[in-house]
Amino acid sequence: MNPLEEKGIPLEKQVRSWHDIVKRPFCKHTVDCYSRTRQILMNGIEVEAWNFKHNFSRTCPDPELSKIVSQTRRIEDMQQTTINWMTPAEQSVLETTLGYEQVAVDLTAWLAQNEPDEYVKETFNFGLLEDFDHLYRYSQWAYMIHGLDPNDILQDMTDVVIGRPTQQHHNCSGVRQLNHYDRKTASPQTKVNIYTLLSGEQQTHNFYAEHGMMYGNDDLRRTYGEICDVEEEHVTMYESLIDPNETPLEKLLLHEFTEVCTYYNCYEDEEDEKLKQIYEEFLGFELGHLQIASELLKKYEKRDPEEIIGNKIILPCRFKSQKEYVADILDKEIGKRMNGKKGYTTVDKIPEDWASYAVQDSVNKDGAPSEQTIHLINTAINMDIVTADDKLRKKEPELLKKGLQLRSNAPNTVPVETYKEMVKVKPMEF
Ligand SMILES: [Fe+2]
Ligand SMILES: [Fe+2]
Ligand SMILES: [Fe+2]
Ligand SMILES: [Fe+2]
Image 1 (cartoon, rainbow, N blue to C red):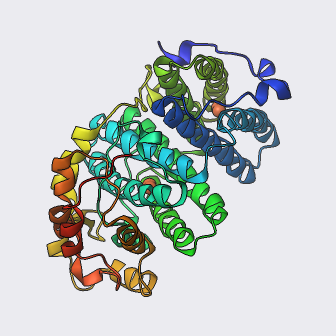
Image 2: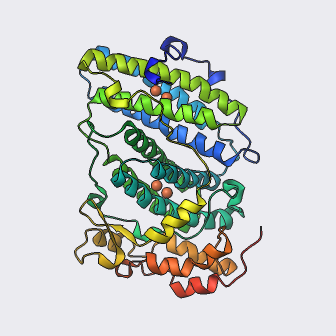
Image 3: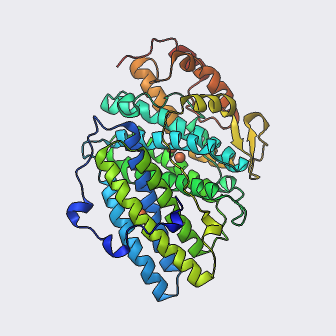
């Protein structure tokens, strides 16, 4: 279908009753893991749409234009409530957290394989291995605090094993700043891919920022603090890929188009009847928003929306198991780092004056919480919680050796030797 030719549901029919806005949540025991990841992602998409439109109004001197944007913004907010509140009350913060990192891993892997721009693809693969390690660290806590098998959430679709160590994700913010695409030549796929991932990463940051304090354990609170800050870096990194020369109305169009594409993709893939029905209805809403945004672009800038978003739907969020792809990237790129010149390097080639050293020296001075996590689980059960097959699990010491940059190790770094001992222990059966 050509989204620009669909009328969708008109704005005046998008205001729903409170009973429609707040629905019965899904069941955490029976929901498919990818129904949960879609729900988590779409919450992030709505938060970004809402937040963008507030920033739009704050810099918009035209009251008529600001009024139109405020009307769709109100709908975005109501949609956000519906989507996010499908989360059941009994889903713990750590369970939801594993869901967030499963989104990050399997979404980023999908996007990397469907990204036409090589530089953007490389950046996706880079970020992928960081969220993959977050999933590993949080899985230790899900066991230590709630006695959870990570597969209660991940359902065997995503591996849990060491990634690029979190203690070394901390960069000088300038180092995270990359080259942006050219708004005139970039493909709509690249734009939608980045807007989608950025929304997911921003919401992950917000979730950790708002929920990390809900646990009493100091080491866990610090782990949330540490990973929350990495998500801040991910937002910086992914947003730097977007051309800042896009006009506000062009960005408005891209936001609505991203919503159309993500809802379309979710509607196609969803098997839970209640969620599918929400996605169908909201796709209609977003097609309505897209109409409004394209009319505004034509009226105020005399531009053709098709030049910006093309004339077909893009699939930016097909969730499926990406174990093979991730294991391959893990093997090849665990020792990769950002070089501070908008490109990449490897641990053996980092220059002495690398700007991120100062940041790592400061934040890890008293030990890295993400390393403390492994000391704690090892003290408790003589190994770490890993759900990958035995071959991949046995590779942990080798992966760590390739992935660590010795110059910036935190004082409490878990040594490769400890990993050699941990992988000798028979893996836990839940
Ligand atoms: Fe929306
Ligand atoms: Fe993450
Ligand atoms: Fe992330
Ligand atoms: Fe929208």
